[in-house]
Length: 462
Image (cartoon, rainbow, N blue to C red):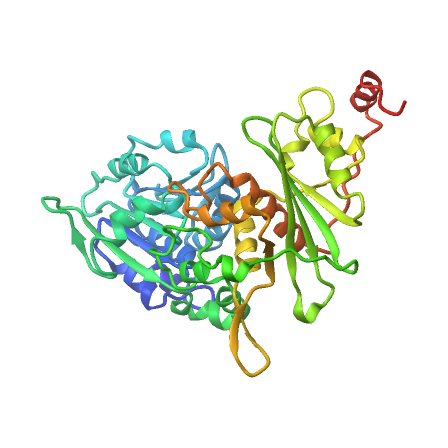
């Protein structure tokens, strides 16, 4: 009896692309390429088939996920399926599934290299790597491939990966599975008996999700162009070159003008001392919701300047302005002894809010801010506009956006460069505005023992 027969009903039924994945004879398989294609459930079925259908007492499977949290989610879902086939979930030392006849599936996560290394050299007839592009080192994949072998008559060995474009392993996965042959084509390298195949799966190949959660499809369609191509259509080629391809000086930069008093003002800080600078951006937001504008109207940076002096400079520069809040680099809250850099700034009179440092999500917010939209001018002319504008005088931020490139180790991230502090500050602002309404001022613990000792030593309050 197959897993599909046991699970026949509303729980799970394979769709055509999933059937292709389950039926392929390839030694190495890459399945997916876009979000929502039904990769997780299909991987669970693929991994567990030898345990149920062939009931090999010596069958050993291995599943690797990106993080411990995502592994826990996978284990929960797998347990819903495997428990119907007689499997027992054992949680220690790491989660594993054991069937009454001896078949076993072990699990680990990619963020803990020790979790992977302990499986290298052992024999596994099925290895499943969820989110394969999170595996940064291709040599580690080759070692896992060496552990994918079988000494069991009638049971071959296979390794499969499910993933979306992006992640630190994007380029080597693309080179190994996507570039050599058209999708759905079985191929092998010259002189090698090992076969590979790339089976793409889009959200539209998973009608169960489309029918039950049409809002998710709408979410994918609403993403900025580059992310939509990667996550909605599984395009592996767009994560190369300039990161903010929608940015242009003609569209996004403007000559300085007097900011109306009715506009709300914000600041964003990325911390540095030397050689990295401390950067502060000033942003003004128009109150007109029907024609919203967000303008970066000032930038400043400091090197070899202590937090208290930076705070005083910022306050002096903003002396005639009412600033709603200042969002700041979360690393400023780190402290081994004495007040943190954030506490020093706040004790010098500059209130701060800790920024959300989610990088990829933050760059997505920047894409959304810079996104071009169609607008009709008087006379019926269609033009492209953007809500985000930058004063031409903010030369460092403009250059930072223009030179930003994809990180070769993680194409969804921005590669480090000499001006990335400017776009980091802008990212903090974009993330703070994305969660507006949830923002709360972070009040410094100015009455802590270390803070009082610091004020006494530095004559604060005298």
